[in-house]
Length: 211
Length: 387
Image: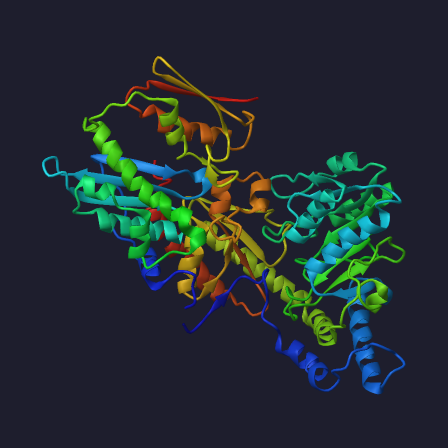
């Protein structure tokens, strides 16, 4: 059958490995949002002694390359220590799949990012973040790069939606260059709050709109 | 793969053998073109065939033979309608046009191009079923308005506009009215002797005719300028080689459509919708339940993404289409689903099934059974919809 996807991708798409969720996982994360299309969640169990990923599952609300990358990333990460797993790149995942169509790269990047985020979530929950950096505007900006702007299909920082960032007494105030009644205003807001409030020294994130 | 289940007839249809048969002599026997009526006899035969085809198509829609020109398809027809009227009336009357927000790309992008050239375009909103509002349209029309373009039936959700009311309004206001009837021609009645429409885009590719031939109905005395320079073909409104086999095939394709067939399409359409709603939870019909083209079923499946669904279906030999951003070359979600108040999720999980002459009820049943399995399998590990 002629297809833009190769046989390995199609095989992982057709029979994705490690699908589902883990109840009470040691670490979990979700990347993407329904508003921008693809979305992927990942759940981890980690051996507290060896820090080896003993179980990993993913869920996808996405296209074929999102599902196939989610599948391969779980295979690549399982049995590795969290330090090793953190280093898995998109290129490795893509190579393991025998390559993905260029236009589909962004759908699969999510699946790689979600693994790193889930590991970070594990580390944050288990007090493994050794260097507790004080949240700066730069850190907030970095996190907001993971919030998609569904209007453009790119993140909200790259698309100049972030107008102002203010950090004061554990509260982050973000001004977004959109009218409050814009169709995507709410989904962007929720997504941004979720990404910022998990920072260790932040109690609250407040999102405001330009009008 | 043995059997295929083709449910993407809004994109292209399988040619009917009878159409090919009618076209064949014009490839091998009378292959000359009608460049001159004073020429050799095969040229005259070619011209006669072209004019006979034109006459059949014009008569089919209640038009005079001189009011129908052949084009390369609906894209060209709509380009000519919008840009040709703009060129003819832009300086004389005004630079304002109105189109609906759910038009197909030829109309939408022609309007955008005209905007870049100094025209003003109002994009008319639609309601949740895809209908334009007549009162809103009335308010938007000004003395400067030269053309209103609102499609007959929608390409994605099948919604059929009240063309008669829209045409009558435009007529009263003295504004030209164009309708893109690509997805309704021969499927939904449109008689220009009853409806005061000035320009109608039609195409052969949606009714088992050949690709690369379409037409534009142009009411007598409509102000329109030529945009494709070349020879004096098509009443000097469109330069370019006469596509005689195409024209003959188009006329034959029209002849083959029967009211019984349209009724059968409608039955299959309703069967798809009925079965999907019976077997699959969390679904939503896109478009109006009854005021829709007989060949179109468009349903959104929550918690799954359309490209994943179509790819799975492809493995069973089933061809359908989706409004998901992941499926499109531009990676943009369907503008139609977004405009009927749908969100990205609804576009993301929308599946369009369009039926044609060669589909059967058994195929429909198989497709819905397979769809049920595929949607369930994808929902099983979807990151949405379990809370």
